[in-house]
View 1 (cartoon, protein in one colour):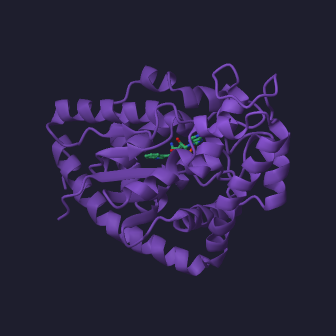
View 2 (cartoon, protein in one colour):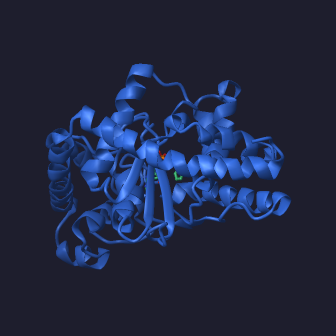
Length: 329
Ligand code: TYM
């Protein structure tokens, strides 16, 4: 038995994983995995809530797991697995559906955004139910802490509400999880539009820097990134585009925004952007070397071991849940 608190988090194998996913989520996981009993999932069942090409989904699922490993998730410390390989996630989602209210899901920002993008009439029920599946992911493992980017806060709040509601109805069963966001408001914005978050499903590739972009692409994207009026390098809410670029610089270099401002007194956007590209490339190069050194076979083996480990926990919890609600087990 472990005395460490448990963390759980996941990423969808859809689109291109970008530096926002790394800074908002994975970078924190790496730090937390020493302190916590950690479970990291590739949430393929979430990915199919919008249309996916089957071949691509398989490829992306392995790619995400490789990214976890290349970034520094250590399978000796953390369990890594694929959501669809542990069927208890779907089973618990169904049970939680029965205590979730329709208006709770209707107010979810991510659903509203995605449904709009995909045309509300054709948005599937799975997309609507997405946050309940996420609650199932979290609650199944007695998760205490959920490290995510700020955009997922509302979903973790639903998981908290459902845990409390279930406990009230059927007796103490679920731990009420806490959200962990590294810095309040930590959200990497799109390079082409600083009013929206950097997104893997963005229409333009100039919105994001993929973790697998090569040097030339990174330079080109940063060069093209929108900036604000004026020419000074200042960190301010009035300059949201620059603020976002300084946040990225700061996260990858360890320098504070104040230090970065000082470095560029009397210099312009050109110098700043060139060095920002270097800082980002300085991170991506060793990361990509590690990524390329991992074979699909070894990653699949790690994923299988991860499934086997977490499945035991999931089965035990499901038995308890079923007993509580009156199923014959
Ligand atoms: P997903 O796949 O959209 O994103 C993965 C993680 O990256 C964070 N993130 C960002 N952080 C900072 N700036 C950004 N621009 C940015 N874009 C994305 C997200 O907050 C997230 O932490 N629903 C989840 C996946 C999920 C999950 C879970 C997470 C399914 N079940 C259980 C935690 C626990 C999602 O869509 O993430």
